Amino acid sequence: MNSFIFITDLNHKSIYPQRPMGLLSRLFGKRKEPVTVDEALPVVNVAGDDERMNWAIEKARATLHYFQNSLITPQSYQQYFSVKVLIEDGPYNEHLWLTTPSFDDEGNLYGVVGNKPVSITSVAINQRIGIEAQFISDWMIIEDGCLIGGYTIRAIRDGLPDSEKIDFDRIAGLYIDEGIDYFVHDFSTPEGAILCLEDAYDEQDIHRAVACKNFVEEARMLLEKMNDTLNNEEILQTTADVLRLSFIKSLENEGFPIFTGINRAYPQREKISQNLFLITEVCIFPDGGRSTQKIYTFRDEEGWKVLGTEG
Image (cartoon, rainbow, N blue to C red; front, side, top):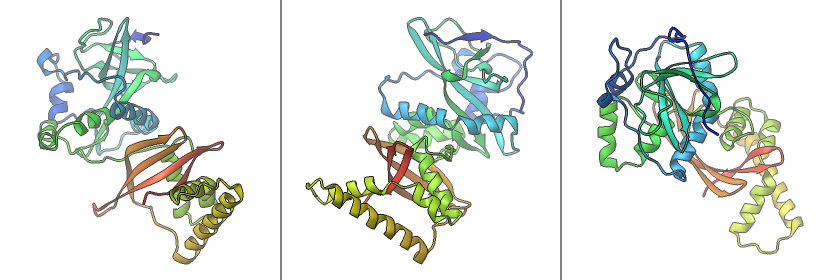
């Protein structure tokens, strides 16, 4: 089914101030004259099965709530907002950026087309359109010169040789690092489950921390690594009980890890099986220091739960 696109009132105004910069200013800048064709952001062809890009789109949709909330109450350090959408036009599909975005009460997105389409003819550059939110494929905010969101931009950058990334950042006029990811703190995603566990740590709530874990699956992984082929449910349950008690005792004796004031990014999600993912978490400390860990997560009947770390 093609994207449902509707032309909007040209007097429809954005609900926040725009202050673009660097490459973004040249591509999407608020100016009196139209953006010329050669200034428009080029469309990059990406295979539909590209794992890096598909993960970028999934992450953008999972964190869209942060973008929407920021539009409602923009902060002084948030200088620029834009949204990428999928436009389906007959046999052609293109992902295009919309500037000056806003949402109506029904959740529909409005914005000005910031790219010159290559193949589709249903929309044109500098045209204000509306589209259903289900077609959003990315969003970005510039916060104090740093890129937040922009997951498809990061996917393209990550595919470049290291020697070209510096030029990419320089031309963009942006500081592009791991970013900060704003997953919902619930059990609907692996990352959300990790955040729930870390919230429990900050609240020093052992019962809540235990509820974020799946010790049976953690025990299964441990036994498999030990080449245990007995497939004995009693051994599995006993091992799970030992892991649970060890987890509780460690928190009681050594204290809770502290995540208050620490920003987190999740640059990689590795699918081990349909219900088992290995998540890379980067913690960014107030002094700029970073730590990286890989965390196994498992989806059970209650949602995603946290297992142990790799290694």
